[in-house]
Image 1 (cartoon, rainbow, N blue to C red):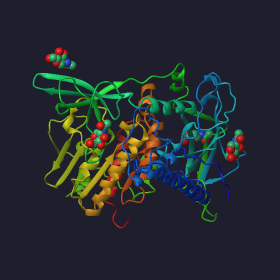
Image 2 (tube, rainbow, N blue to C red; image 1 turned 60 degrees about the horizontal axis):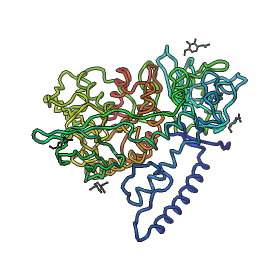
Image 3 (cartoon, helix red, strand yellow; image 1 turned 30 degrees about the vertical axis):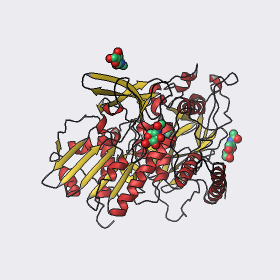
Image 4 (cartoon, rainbow, N blue to C red; image 1 turned 30 degrees about the horizontal axis):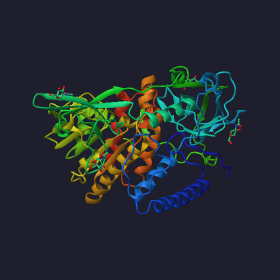
Length: 558
Ligand SMILES: *[C@@H]1O[C@H](CO)[C@@H](O)[C@H](O)[C@H]1NC(C)=O
Ligand SMILES: *[C@@H]1O[C@H](CO)[C@@H](O)[C@H](O)[C@H]1NC(C)=O
Ligand SMILES: *[C@@H]1O[C@H](CO)[C@@H](O)[C@H](O)[C@H]1NC(C)=O
Ligand SMILES: *[C@@H]1O[C@H](CO)[C@@H](O)[C@H](O)[C@H]1NC(C)=O
């Protein structure tokens, strides 16, 4: 077996089986040793291991976790560790950074002559060069890859593997007959990843929030966040008592903390060093296609029955699904049915309660159902159209659909502070059961914060999911992944696909082994021909809703 230097640059990529297990065991044993040392070192002072190398966020410290959670946090952070990436410096000029226009990919084998069949895997070698056309010698560039055929409405996400020497592989499953075109996109040069990591370390408060406080005729506004820079000003501690989720505001001068009435996005105050902005130029070195040397196309012939299947040890597991004729075909989930009319959707949802929780990318699904189903009547709660909460009912069919935003951080217009609810606490209030469907998605508002915040949020949600499944094992729980999006400069600094990818890996690991299902919106956006969008456009939403409804109402006999 060929053992490769192996690094994850796309979700759920696995190194060849056995070496991965050995590496994992070695890492595990090492961490266990480290962990025990920590407990010993701090005996008498604290029974918790003190986080060492990960928590380097200057003023952002988090409460200690239980030993199990702390160990998991550390393993997760290690599992998503990105390769070392260079920084711009006196000895590294912009011209020496990755330049997609000079970089090339090649379909393997390079000499050609290969005949491809459905079921085969296609491998592409990608070589990165700098602005001078000199080969890059280190890894860490963030690449995305897809294989598609526009005329057939076909597309599938590829897995990218970093060889850590300036070259990368992309691997695709061949799933349809006809031609297929490879597309490789540089999302960020490695040097930009260095900047994103530094921003999160040094400026985790670059997106900040505000709250209004009011009592009688006195009102004040102060700044709030997950972590606040220490000043002379005292703090209001709004840490959630049930989950321990942190939230703070500077205390108003003349008002008490319990007079807080609202929460809203205060703005962005991040800053880059000289020249760093040039690492984030759309169309130049951010979200830019890389050209093929030679053909970018292959022709795929029908599955060859006589030939043994080409089994690759590279892509494990394969893609979650692919598009054919614009319709998502699930590989990892149930057969996707088409729910094209209100009556088919109503039939499926009859007697169900569907609870949607999360950010605006989940709100889209409430909006879709509300629009697609004339008999589903939204009750006007006079709530914010962005943040909700929403509730909609179809009395005749006994269908209830609700939507609620996740707890802070919430980048939004001003909403009542009392409308901020943590998903874990909401799940703890559900009876659950065979008629209950829970769907949540939480990612886009976390990109500016240390990954620890996200890990802890998911640990809290997972605990609530486990409790819910214990008391009502028939509850259907669907979890939305993140997705790639459009990225002008400011978006790159506040919600880059790189941050989404890193957090998405955590999400996938966190819920592994539980009786829950992932809605792989990451692949559904990546594989589609429409441009990446934080809020995926209607044709993608339609496909996602069909996947959700196929989980709720699987095809008979499948
Ligand atoms: C490459 O594939 C596209 C469709 O995906 C097709 O339109 C084009 O003609 C193909 N080019 C070659 C050279 O086969
Ligand atoms: C980089 O590593 C890969 C995998 O080991 C190898 O195939 C490739 O030739 C190397 N490239 C260079 C430029 O050394
Ligand atoms: C905030 O409140 C929580 C919960 O009561 C407490 O555990 C934590 O230590 C407090 N943090 C600060 C900085 O006061
Ligand atoms: C607080 O009250 C004092 C006295 O009424 C007033 O002078 C001051 O401006 C107030 N401060 C704020 C921030 O509202």
